[in-house]
Image (cartoon, rainbow, N blue to C red; front, top):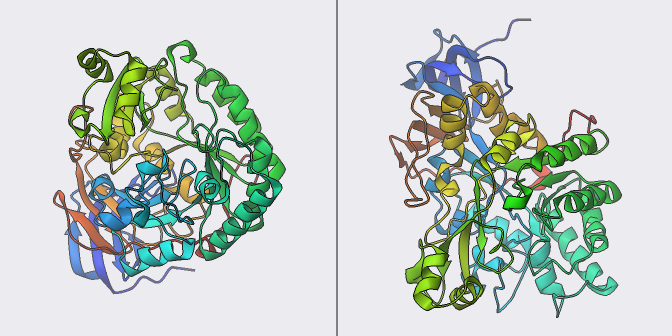
Length: 495
């Protein structure tokens, strides 16, 4: 049966190199869009558009899905989301690393919650209120949000330096159940951080059972990404098995000079686990991480750059070692003097980054921190860096494969139905870019520079980025769990 094509569309993008998101070789053709959907794909000479764009052979791909963000508040405070739109990102996953803006009412903002909330007024007492705020004042991009385990702990425990009691776990489960009913897509943990490091595995398993009941997903900033990374991976696998939930290992990396090269073992462990449970992971294309400034990572990092400091904002962008010399202190004393603060830690090897990026199941997540005074360049550069540096310059994998890691792969993991693919009926989330020039321009010295080569970005059929600037359109949707499909799709186990 021959597909019937419409005679007219709202918009036709012509003469593009179509990269459909599946990893298949690109083709030359056109895409027609009406309202928020793609209505035709191919050689569409007989379809007229009310508005037409000539691609001139540039690449047209599904909009990129940033699977690991801390955009929770930025979606409301800076809804044009230029840091993401400028990269071709059309959907973000928030509520990562155990921290979310809801459900919580608190007078204090203990780290790392202060990475996303600048004041108690930034918080929402229930998850419905947060999602309703996104719908009332929509951002430019789509957003799907998780509940943070640490956020639940702050609300339920009077002392975060211990395990939760059975009563406190029941209270957290009740809040989590309500948030999932309100539209949260799952729960994240940040067991590395002080807010949750005292939580035993069993506490997380009990909460993750609620995620299973709601057919959601669990993402984790593991307890350790250095000397004890294998033990932390086993803990994550156990949580997934015993709660029967799909697991995403967040920003997979191996930190510390003594651990360089261990990604061979960690990837082997993940591959083995994937044969009998749903395990996924994401990665960012840099050898430096970024989070709160604390003593845990000082010894593991070869260089530390301060990204923000409440008592000393003038130190943003400076090396911690230089500040320590000026203060006449050691690194620990200097970090304590600057706190609360954030930092960039140079602690991974390029070989490990390349090895993890090369894995066929590696999704791309920026882990950018939009409220830092001097942010890690991943906030503005992650996706163009993969396309320009690792694909075009390094030849690590094909352009089609890179796009798959940014589109259909994360769409399957997070149940983003009708997103992540150029096909008839899919949402018109699209990015037009020049594969010959696309590149990140954000650096550790100048981290907020816009990438090159991203010509146009569209969300739900409306153009949000064009000619190097936001258009002002804000068609993004709050993607509630009830509107999504099965999560944790894993071809290895058929989930």
